[in-house]
Length: 471
View 1: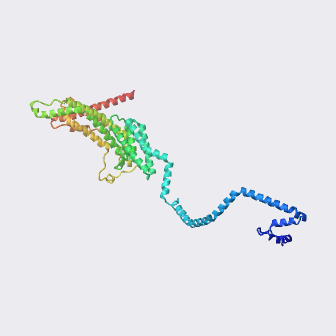
View 2: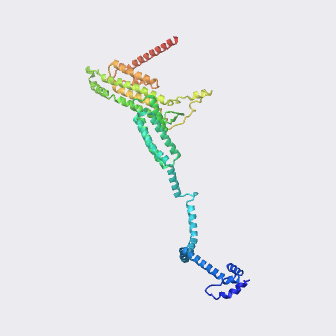
View 3: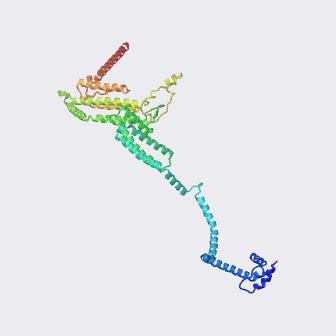
Protein backbone atom coordinates (compact mmCIF):
# COMPACT_ATOMS: atom_id res chain seq x y z
CA UNK A 1 0.00 0.00 0.00
CA UNK A 2 1.29 3.45 -0.93
CA UNK A 3 2.17 5.96 1.76
CA UNK A 4 -0.64 8.55 2.29
CA UNK A 5 1.96 11.28 2.44
CA UNK A 6 3.32 10.19 -0.94
CA UNK A 7 -0.18 10.29 -2.40
CA UNK A 8 -0.63 13.75 -0.98
CA UNK A 9 2.56 15.01 -2.58
CA UNK A 10 2.17 13.14 -5.89
CA UNK A 11 0.26 15.94 -7.71
CA UNK A 12 3.14 18.30 -7.08
CA UNK A 13 5.64 16.02 -8.83
CA UNK A 14 4.02 16.83 -12.14
CA UNK A 15 4.87 20.51 -11.84
CA UNK A 16 8.52 19.79 -12.75
CA UNK A 17 8.45 17.66 -15.91
CA UNK A 18 12.25 17.74 -16.30
CA UNK A 19 12.67 15.41 -13.35
CA UNK A 20 11.16 11.98 -13.03
CA UNK A 21 8.99 11.45 -9.97
CA UNK A 22 10.36 9.31 -7.16
CA UNK A 23 9.11 5.78 -6.88
CA UNK A 24 6.96 4.95 -3.85
CA UNK A 25 8.79 1.64 -3.32
CA UNK A 26 12.24 3.25 -3.31
CA UNK A 27 13.86 2.81 0.13
CA UNK A 28 15.30 6.32 -0.02
CA UNK A 29 11.84 7.78 -0.75
CA UNK A 30 10.26 5.78 2.04
CA UNK A 31 12.98 6.84 4.47
CA UNK A 32 12.62 10.50 3.57
CA UNK A 33 8.81 10.42 3.86
CA UNK A 34 9.17 8.81 7.26
CA UNK A 35 11.49 11.64 8.31
CA UNK A 36 9.01 14.29 7.07
CA UNK A 37 6.30 12.76 9.15
CA UNK A 38 8.34 13.37 12.27
CA UNK A 39 9.07 17.04 11.64
CA UNK A 40 7.01 19.93 12.92
CA UNK A 41 5.23 22.32 10.62
CA UNK A 42 7.66 25.13 11.37
CA UNK A 43 10.63 22.94 10.58
CA UNK A 44 9.04 21.99 7.30
CA UNK A 45 8.72 25.63 6.33
CA UNK A 46 11.99 27.00 7.65
CA UNK A 47 14.73 24.38 8.17
CA UNK A 48 13.83 21.66 5.66
CA UNK A 49 14.33 23.80 2.54
CA UNK A 50 17.69 24.86 3.87
CA UNK A 51 18.62 21.28 4.63
CA UNK A 52 17.57 20.17 1.16
CA UNK A 53 19.54 23.01 -0.45
CA UNK A 54 22.57 22.13 1.61
CA UNK A 55 22.29 18.42 0.68
CA UNK A 56 21.85 19.35 -2.97
CA UNK A 57 24.90 21.58 -2.83
CA UNK A 58 26.92 18.85 -1.15
CA UNK A 59 25.84 16.32 -3.78
CA UNK A 60 26.76 18.83 -6.49
CA UNK A 61 30.20 19.31 -5.02
CA UNK A 62 30.65 15.57 -4.73
CA UNK A 63 29.67 15.09 -8.35
CA UNK A 64 32.06 17.80 -9.47
CA UNK A 65 34.97 16.34 -7.52
CA UNK A 66 34.08 12.87 -8.80
CA UNK A 67 33.95 14.09 -12.38
CA UNK A 68 37.27 15.86 -11.90
CA UNK A 69 38.94 12.76 -10.52
CA UNK A 70 37.37 10.29 -12.94
CA UNK A 71 37.24 12.32 -16.11
CA UNK A 72 40.00 10.31 -17.81
CA UNK A 73 38.53 6.97 -16.74
CA UNK A 74 35.11 8.05 -17.89
CA UNK A 75 36.45 9.16 -21.26
CA UNK A 76 38.39 5.91 -21.65
CA UNK A 77 35.33 3.94 -20.69
CA UNK A 78 33.33 5.79 -23.28
CA UNK A 79 35.95 5.07 -25.93
CA UNK A 80 36.07 1.41 -24.94
CA UNK A 81 32.32 1.26 -25.06
CA UNK A 82 32.47 2.65 -28.58
CA UNK A 83 35.12 0.11 -29.67
CA UNK A 84 33.27 -2.66 -27.91
CA UNK A 85 30.60 -2.46 -30.53
CA UNK A 86 33.24 -3.42 -33.14
CA UNK A 87 35.19 -5.89 -30.97
CA UNK A 88 32.26 -8.02 -29.96
CA UNK A 89 31.36 -9.04 -33.54
CA UNK A 90 35.06 -9.72 -34.26
CA UNK A 91 35.28 -11.88 -31.13
CA UNK A 92 32.20 -13.75 -32.19
CA UNK A 93 33.68 -14.30 -35.66
CA UNK A 94 37.02 -15.52 -34.25
CA UNK A 95 35.23 -17.80 -31.82
CA UNK A 96 33.36 -19.34 -34.74
CA UNK A 97 36.59 -19.86 -36.65
CA UNK A 98 38.18 -21.42 -33.58
CA UNK A 99 35.21 -23.68 -33.19
CA UNK A 100 35.55 -24.76 -36.80
CA UNK A 101 39.36 -25.30 -36.44
CA UNK A 102 39.06 -27.54 -33.40
CA UNK A 103 38.27 -30.56 -35.56
CA UNK A 104 41.31 -29.89 -37.78
CA UNK A 105 43.49 -29.42 -34.70
CA UNK A 106 42.22 -32.68 -33.29
CA UNK A 107 43.08 -34.55 -36.49
CA UNK A 108 46.59 -33.01 -36.59
CA UNK A 109 47.17 -33.91 -32.95
CA UNK A 110 46.15 -37.51 -33.59
CA UNK A 111 48.37 -37.65 -36.68
CA UNK A 112 51.34 -36.23 -34.73
CA UNK A 113 50.86 -38.71 -31.89
CA UNK A 114 50.70 -41.60 -34.34
CA UNK A 115 53.74 -40.37 -36.30
CA UNK A 116 56.01 -39.82 -33.28
CA UNK A 117 54.70 -42.65 -31.15
CA UNK A 118 57.38 -44.74 -29.40
CA UNK A 119 55.47 -47.92 -30.05
CA UNK A 120 55.92 -47.80 -33.85
CA UNK A 121 58.97 -47.41 -36.11
CA UNK A 122 59.86 -43.86 -37.05
CA UNK A 123 62.94 -42.78 -38.98
CA UNK A 124 63.00 -39.30 -37.49
CA UNK A 125 62.86 -40.60 -33.94
CA UNK A 126 65.48 -43.21 -34.78
CA UNK A 127 67.82 -40.53 -36.09
CA UNK A 128 67.23 -38.42 -33.01
CA UNK A 129 67.83 -41.38 -30.74
CA UNK A 130 71.06 -42.20 -32.56
CA UNK A 131 72.19 -38.58 -32.35
CA UNK A 132 71.47 -38.48 -28.61
CA UNK A 133 73.21 -41.81 -28.12
CA UNK A 134 76.28 -40.60 -29.99
CA UNK A 135 76.27 -37.39 -27.98
CA UNK A 136 76.23 -39.33 -24.71
CA UNK A 137 78.95 -41.77 -25.84
CA UNK A 138 81.21 -39.37 -27.74
CA UNK A 139 84.13 -40.15 -25.41
CA UNK A 140 83.80 -43.88 -25.98
CA UNK A 141 83.54 -43.41 -29.73
CA UNK A 142 86.66 -41.26 -29.69
CA UNK A 143 88.53 -43.95 -27.78
CA UNK A 144 87.42 -46.60 -30.28
CA UNK A 145 88.49 -44.44 -33.23
CA UNK A 146 91.91 -43.94 -31.62
CA UNK A 147 92.52 -47.69 -31.26
CA UNK A 148 94.05 -48.20 -34.76
CA UNK A 149 96.41 -45.27 -34.25
CA UNK A 150 97.43 -46.57 -30.84
CA UNK A 151 97.92 -50.06 -32.25
CA UNK A 152 100.00 -48.73 -35.16
CA UNK A 153 102.25 -46.71 -32.84
CA UNK A 154 102.68 -49.73 -30.57
CA UNK A 155 103.68 -51.97 -33.48
CA UNK A 156 106.03 -49.32 -34.85
CA UNK A 157 107.77 -48.93 -31.51
CA UNK A 158 108.06 -52.73 -31.25
CA UNK A 159 109.60 -52.92 -34.73
CA UNK A 160 112.14 -50.26 -33.81
CA UNK A 161 113.31 -52.36 -30.85
CA UNK A 162 113.13 -55.70 -32.76
CA UNK A 163 111.43 -58.84 -31.50
CA UNK A 164 112.98 -58.51 -28.04
CA UNK A 165 110.44 -55.82 -27.17
CA UNK A 166 108.04 -58.15 -25.39
CA UNK A 167 105.89 -55.52 -23.71
CA UNK A 168 105.00 -53.60 -26.87
CA UNK A 169 104.04 -56.70 -28.85
CA UNK A 170 102.00 -58.03 -25.92
CA UNK A 171 100.20 -54.68 -25.65
CA UNK A 172 99.50 -54.70 -29.39
CA UNK A 173 98.04 -58.20 -29.15
CA UNK A 174 95.85 -57.14 -26.22
CA UNK A 175 94.56 -54.19 -28.24
CA UNK A 176 93.84 -56.47 -31.19
CA UNK A 177 91.97 -58.90 -28.92
CA UNK A 178 89.90 -56.00 -27.60
CA UNK A 179 88.99 -55.01 -31.17
CA UNK A 180 88.03 -58.60 -31.91
CA UNK A 181 85.66 -58.57 -28.94
CA UNK A 182 84.15 -55.31 -30.16
CA UNK A 183 83.57 -56.87 -33.59
CA UNK A 184 81.81 -59.81 -31.97
CA UNK A 185 79.64 -57.62 -29.75
CA UNK A 186 78.77 -55.02 -32.41
CA UNK A 187 78.70 -56.91 -35.69
CA UNK A 188 76.38 -54.39 -37.40
CA UNK A 189 78.37 -51.27 -36.49
CA UNK A 190 80.07 -49.62 -39.45
CA UNK A 191 82.49 -47.83 -37.13
CA UNK A 192 83.61 -51.08 -35.53
CA UNK A 193 83.98 -52.68 -38.97
CA UNK A 194 86.13 -49.79 -40.17
CA UNK A 195 88.28 -49.88 -37.04
CA UNK A 196 88.62 -53.65 -37.39
CA UNK A 197 89.75 -53.32 -41.01
CA UNK A 198 92.41 -50.78 -40.04
CA UNK A 199 93.51 -53.02 -37.18
CA UNK A 200 93.89 -55.97 -39.55
CA UNK A 201 96.20 -53.91 -41.77
CA UNK A 202 98.34 -53.06 -38.76
CA UNK A 203 98.38 -56.69 -37.64
CA UNK A 204 99.53 -57.74 -41.10
CA UNK A 205 102.43 -55.35 -40.70
CA UNK A 206 103.13 -56.83 -37.28
CA UNK A 207 102.98 -60.34 -38.74
CA UNK A 208 105.51 -59.35 -41.39
CA UNK A 209 107.80 -57.94 -38.71
CA UNK A 210 107.55 -61.12 -36.66
CA UNK A 211 108.29 -63.30 -39.69
CA UNK A 212 111.29 -61.10 -40.53
CA UNK A 213 112.47 -61.46 -36.94
CA UNK A 214 112.41 -65.26 -37.36
CA UNK A 215 114.78 -64.85 -40.30
CA UNK A 216 117.32 -62.93 -38.22
CA UNK A 217 120.63 -64.56 -37.31
CA UNK A 218 120.58 -63.93 -33.57
CA UNK A 219 117.37 -65.80 -32.76
CA UNK A 220 117.58 -67.58 -29.43
CA UNK A 221 115.17 -70.14 -28.08
CA UNK A 222 113.32 -67.69 -25.80
CA UNK A 223 112.90 -65.18 -28.61
CA UNK A 224 111.74 -67.89 -31.00
CA UNK A 225 109.18 -69.23 -28.53
CA UNK A 226 107.81 -65.73 -27.87
CA UNK A 227 107.64 -64.95 -31.57
CA UNK A 228 105.83 -68.17 -32.42
CA UNK A 229 103.46 -67.57 -29.52
CA UNK A 230 102.65 -64.10 -30.87
CA UNK A 231 102.11 -65.49 -34.36
CA UNK A 232 99.82 -68.16 -32.91
CA UNK A 233 97.74 -65.42 -31.25
CA UNK A 234 97.61 -63.33 -34.42
CA UNK A 235 96.81 -66.24 -36.75
CA UNK A 236 95.27 -69.02 -34.67
CA UNK A 237 94.26 -70.86 -37.83
CA UNK A 238 97.95 -71.48 -38.59
CA UNK A 239 98.48 -73.02 -35.17
CA UNK A 240 95.74 -75.60 -35.59
CA UNK A 241 97.29 -78.98 -36.20
CA UNK A 242 96.08 -81.12 -39.06
CA UNK A 243 94.64 -84.55 -38.29
CA UNK A 244 96.55 -87.31 -40.02
CA UNK A 245 96.21 -91.06 -39.52
CA UNK A 246 93.93 -90.59 -36.54
CA UNK A 247 96.36 -88.30 -34.70
CA UNK A 248 96.57 -84.57 -34.57
CA UNK A 249 99.89 -82.80 -35.05
CA UNK A 250 100.53 -79.86 -32.75
CA UNK A 251 102.64 -77.68 -35.01
CA UNK A 252 100.11 -76.70 -37.66
CA UNK A 253 101.39 -74.40 -40.35
CA UNK A 254 103.46 -72.38 -37.88
CA UNK A 255 106.02 -75.16 -37.75
CA UNK A 256 106.50 -75.04 -41.50
CA UNK A 257 106.67 -71.24 -41.37
CA UNK A 258 109.32 -71.38 -38.65
CA UNK A 259 111.41 -73.88 -40.63
CA UNK A 260 111.14 -71.83 -43.83
CA UNK A 261 112.29 -68.68 -42.02
CA UNK A 262 115.24 -70.41 -40.41
CA UNK A 263 116.11 -72.06 -43.73
CA UNK A 264 116.18 -68.61 -45.34
CA UNK A 265 118.60 -67.50 -42.63
CA UNK A 266 120.76 -70.58 -43.24
CA UNK A 267 120.80 -69.93 -46.98
CA UNK A 268 121.76 -66.29 -46.42
CA UNK A 269 124.62 -67.36 -44.18
CA UNK A 270 125.79 -69.86 -46.76
CA UNK A 271 125.54 -67.21 -49.46
CA UNK A 272 128.03 -65.15 -47.45
CA UNK A 273 130.59 -67.75 -48.57
CA UNK A 274 130.18 -66.70 -52.21
CA UNK A 275 133.79 -65.37 -52.48
CA UNK A 276 135.11 -68.83 -51.51
CA UNK A 277 132.50 -70.43 -53.74
CA UNK A 278 133.72 -68.45 -56.73
CA UNK A 279 137.25 -69.70 -56.11
CA UNK A 280 135.91 -73.26 -55.84
CA UNK A 281 134.05 -72.79 -59.14
CA UNK A 282 137.26 -71.68 -60.77
CA UNK A 283 138.97 -74.84 -59.53
CA UNK A 284 136.05 -76.87 -60.90
CA UNK A 285 136.56 -75.27 -64.30
CA UNK A 286 140.29 -75.98 -64.23
CA UNK A 287 139.61 -79.58 -63.19
CA UNK A 288 137.18 -80.04 -66.04
CA UNK A 289 139.70 -78.54 -68.44
CA UNK A 290 142.41 -80.85 -67.11
CA UNK A 291 140.37 -84.04 -67.54
CA UNK A 292 141.56 -84.51 -71.15
CA UNK A 293 145.24 -84.38 -70.12
CA UNK A 294 145.15 -86.99 -67.37
CA UNK A 295 146.89 -89.61 -69.53
CA UNK A 296 149.84 -87.27 -70.16
CA UNK A 297 150.75 -87.24 -66.48
CA UNK A 298 149.00 -83.97 -65.70
CA UNK A 299 146.75 -85.38 -62.99
CA UNK A 300 144.66 -82.85 -61.07
CA UNK A 301 146.27 -81.94 -57.76
CA UNK A 302 144.44 -78.74 -56.75
CA UNK A 303 141.39 -78.23 -54.54
CA UNK A 304 142.80 -76.11 -51.73
CA UNK A 305 140.20 -73.34 -52.19
CA UNK A 306 137.44 -75.90 -52.54
CA UNK A 307 138.55 -77.52 -49.30
CA UNK A 308 138.36 -74.17 -47.50
CA UNK A 309 134.91 -73.54 -48.92
CA UNK A 310 133.56 -76.97 -48.01
CA UNK A 311 134.99 -76.90 -44.48
CA UNK A 312 133.39 -73.56 -43.79
CA UNK A 313 130.18 -74.65 -45.49
CA UNK A 314 129.87 -77.86 -43.46
CA UNK A 315 130.74 -76.01 -40.26
CA UNK A 316 127.98 -73.43 -40.76
CA UNK A 317 125.60 -76.14 -41.92
CA UNK A 318 126.24 -78.29 -38.83
CA UNK A 319 125.80 -75.44 -36.34
CA UNK A 320 122.72 -73.94 -37.92
CA UNK A 321 120.92 -77.19 -38.80
CA UNK A 322 121.36 -78.53 -35.26
CA UNK A 323 120.19 -75.20 -33.81
CA UNK A 324 117.15 -75.09 -36.10
CA UNK A 325 115.95 -78.62 -35.41
CA UNK A 326 116.60 -78.48 -31.66
CA UNK A 327 114.80 -75.13 -31.43
CA UNK A 328 111.91 -76.52 -33.46
CA UNK A 329 111.55 -79.51 -31.13
CA UNK A 330 111.60 -77.19 -28.11
CA UNK A 331 109.02 -74.80 -29.54
CA UNK A 332 106.77 -77.54 -30.96
CA UNK A 333 107.15 -80.44 -28.53
CA UNK A 334 103.89 -82.03 -29.73
CA UNK A 335 104.84 -81.87 -33.40
CA UNK A 336 106.06 -85.44 -33.57
CA UNK A 337 104.17 -86.77 -30.57
CA UNK A 338 101.49 -89.28 -31.24
CA UNK A 339 102.66 -90.17 -34.74
CA UNK A 340 104.36 -93.37 -33.61
CA UNK A 341 101.61 -94.64 -31.34
CA UNK A 342 100.92 -98.31 -31.89
CA UNK A 343 97.32 -99.37 -31.81
CA UNK A 344 98.25 -102.76 -30.43
CA UNK A 345 100.07 -101.19 -27.47
CA UNK A 346 97.03 -99.13 -26.64
CA UNK A 347 94.83 -102.20 -26.50
CA UNK A 348 97.49 -104.20 -24.66
CA UNK A 349 97.43 -101.73 -21.77
CA UNK A 350 93.73 -102.53 -21.39
CA UNK A 351 94.27 -106.27 -21.50
CA UNK A 352 92.71 -106.63 -24.95
CA UNK A 353 94.01 -108.15 -28.14
CA UNK A 354 94.56 -105.94 -31.12
CA UNK A 355 92.82 -106.76 -34.35
CA UNK A 356 94.78 -107.59 -37.50
CA UNK A 357 96.06 -104.62 -39.43
CA UNK A 358 93.76 -105.41 -42.34
CA UNK A 359 90.74 -104.87 -40.11
CA UNK A 360 91.92 -101.49 -38.87
CA UNK A 361 90.88 -99.08 -41.57
CA UNK A 362 91.96 -95.49 -41.20
CA UNK A 363 90.21 -92.69 -42.91
CA UNK A 364 91.35 -92.72 -46.49
CA UNK A 365 92.58 -89.41 -47.85
CA UNK A 366 92.53 -89.31 -51.68
CA UNK A 367 95.46 -86.87 -51.65
CA UNK A 368 97.32 -88.87 -49.01
CA UNK A 369 98.31 -87.21 -45.69
CA UNK A 370 101.11 -84.69 -45.92
CA UNK A 371 104.38 -85.65 -44.27
CA UNK A 372 105.62 -83.86 -41.21
CA UNK A 373 107.27 -80.55 -41.96
CA UNK A 374 110.26 -81.49 -39.79
CA UNK A 375 110.88 -84.72 -41.66
CA UNK A 376 110.61 -82.98 -45.02
CA UNK A 377 112.88 -80.21 -43.76
CA UNK A 378 115.53 -82.72 -42.63
CA UNK A 379 115.46 -84.39 -46.03
CA UNK A 380 115.82 -81.02 -47.71
CA UNK A 381 118.82 -80.18 -45.53
CA UNK A 382 120.44 -83.49 -46.45
CA UNK A 383 119.78 -82.86 -50.14
CA UNK A 384 121.20 -79.35 -49.83
CA UNK A 385 124.43 -80.67 -48.31
CA UNK A 386 124.80 -83.66 -50.62
CA UNK A 387 124.25 -81.53 -53.73
CA UNK A 388 127.03 -79.21 -52.63
CA UNK A 389 129.34 -82.10 -51.82
CA UNK A 390 128.65 -83.81 -55.14
CA UNK A 391 129.49 -80.61 -56.97
CA UNK A 392 132.65 -79.59 -55.19
CA UNK A 393 134.08 -82.67 -53.42
CA UNK A 394 135.62 -84.08 -56.65
CA UNK A 395 137.89 -81.00 -56.72
CA UNK A 396 139.60 -82.21 -53.53
CA UNK A 397 141.92 -85.09 -54.52
CA UNK A 398 144.17 -85.10 -51.46
CA UNK A 399 143.27 -88.17 -49.41
CA UNK A 400 143.80 -86.63 -46.01
CA UNK A 401 141.77 -83.58 -46.96
CA UNK A 402 138.92 -85.71 -48.27
CA UNK A 403 138.97 -87.84 -45.12
CA UNK A 404 138.87 -84.69 -43.00
CA UNK A 405 135.92 -83.31 -44.94
CA UNK A 406 133.99 -86.58 -44.86
CA UNK A 407 134.68 -86.99 -41.15
CA UNK A 408 133.35 -83.49 -40.60
CA UNK A 409 130.23 -84.45 -42.54
CA UNK A 410 129.84 -87.57 -40.39
CA UNK A 411 130.06 -85.47 -37.24
CA UNK A 412 127.39 -83.23 -38.70
CA UNK A 413 125.21 -86.26 -39.44
CA UNK A 414 125.82 -87.57 -35.92
CA UNK A 415 124.78 -84.30 -34.31
CA UNK A 416 121.57 -84.33 -36.31
CA UNK A 417 121.22 -88.04 -35.52
CA UNK A 418 120.69 -87.17 -31.85
CA UNK A 419 117.62 -85.26 -33.08
CA UNK A 420 116.46 -88.03 -35.40
CA UNK A 421 118.02 -86.74 -38.63
CA UNK A 422 121.09 -88.91 -39.26
CA UNK A 423 122.07 -88.83 -42.95
CA UNK A 424 125.47 -90.52 -42.73
CA UNK A 425 124.60 -93.09 -45.38
CA UNK A 426 124.39 -90.40 -48.07
CA UNK A 427 128.19 -90.59 -48.29
CA UNK A 428 127.70 -93.68 -50.41
CA UNK A 429 126.32 -91.51 -53.23
CA UNK A 430 129.06 -88.87 -53.21
CA UNK A 431 131.53 -90.69 -55.53
CA UNK A 432 131.85 -89.34 -59.06
CA UNK A 433 132.24 -91.35 -62.23
CA UNK A 434 135.93 -90.59 -62.66
CA UNK A 435 136.95 -92.09 -59.33
CA UNK A 436 138.67 -95.48 -59.33
CA UNK A 437 137.56 -98.48 -57.32
CA UNK A 438 139.77 -97.59 -54.35
CA UNK A 439 138.39 -94.08 -54.11
CA UNK A 440 134.82 -95.31 -54.48
CA UNK A 441 135.22 -97.33 -51.33
CA UNK A 442 136.94 -94.67 -49.28
CA UNK A 443 133.75 -93.72 -47.52
CA UNK A 444 133.56 -97.28 -46.13
CA UNK A 445 136.88 -96.88 -44.37
CA UNK A 446 135.99 -93.44 -43.14
CA UNK A 447 132.70 -94.76 -41.78
CA UNK A 448 134.52 -97.57 -39.95
CA UNK A 449 137.02 -95.18 -38.43
CA UNK A 450 134.23 -92.87 -37.36
CA UNK A 451 132.25 -95.66 -35.73
CA UNK A 452 135.37 -97.03 -34.05
CA UNK A 453 136.15 -93.63 -32.64
CA UNK A 454 132.56 -93.20 -31.51
CA UNK A 455 132.68 -96.60 -29.78
CA UNK A 456 135.87 -95.67 -27.96
CA UNK A 457 134.32 -92.45 -26.77
CA UNK A 458 131.31 -94.37 -25.45
CA UNK A 459 133.60 -96.81 -23.64
CA UNK A 460 135.55 -93.98 -22.10
CA UNK A 461 132.36 -92.28 -21.06
CA UNK A 462 130.99 -95.48 -19.51
CA UNK A 463 134.32 -96.14 -17.79
CA UNK A 464 134.41 -92.69 -16.31
CA UNK A 465 130.85 -93.13 -15.17
CA UNK A 466 131.72 -96.47 -13.55
CA UNK A 467 134.70 -94.99 -11.80
CA UNK A 468 132.57 -92.13 -10.59
CA UNK A 469 130.06 -94.61 -9.16
CA UNK A 470 132.83 -96.60 -7.46
CA UNK A 471 134.24 -93.51 -5.84
